[in-house]
Length: 78
Image (cartoon, rainbow, N blue to C red; front, side, top):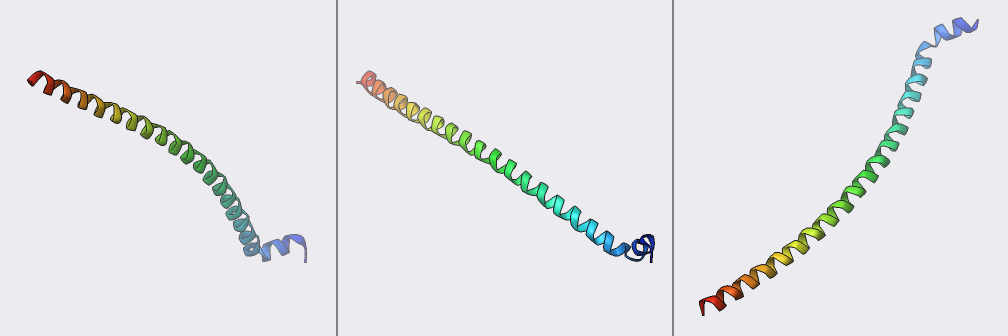
């Protein structure tokens, strides 16, 4: 039995092994993609936290201004 006959008779085995290697390579790329996406999500979460903090501070300032306006209105009315 020559090598060509062996390859011809076991083509399904070669295709299976090739498919297995392809699947493993795809899984390895997926892991890399997941780690990149995880780092992007972390940076977005940090940015969101900063924005929420800034919005909270602005809301406090707006509330203080509303209170001041209320005091001014009541003083003007008296």
